[in-house]
Image 1 (cartoon, helix red, strand yellow):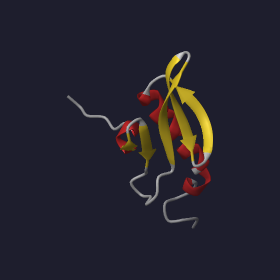
Image 2: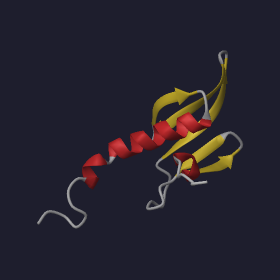
Image 3: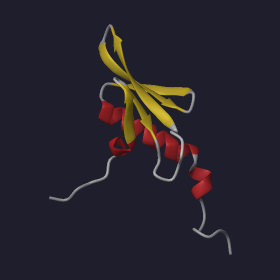
Image 4: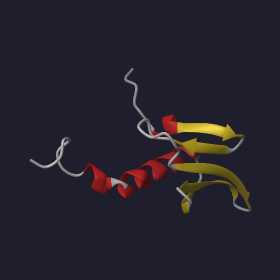
Length: 86
């Protein structure tokens, strides 16, 4: 059985119903997920920095959205060869 990495593994539950997402290369969390009760049922509020980027119906989907937004936000920093232009 092959194991697969998932953005869910970046989450740390800081208090009940609240998760912080931290990249292995960062010291501070880049975003978070908070469980909220709504009329439509439980929802997960996804934030990147201080910005709400969306809502999800599961923690798995919320962590995927947060990771995708994090990668898109910092995409320019990863362009080019690993050691810079030659």
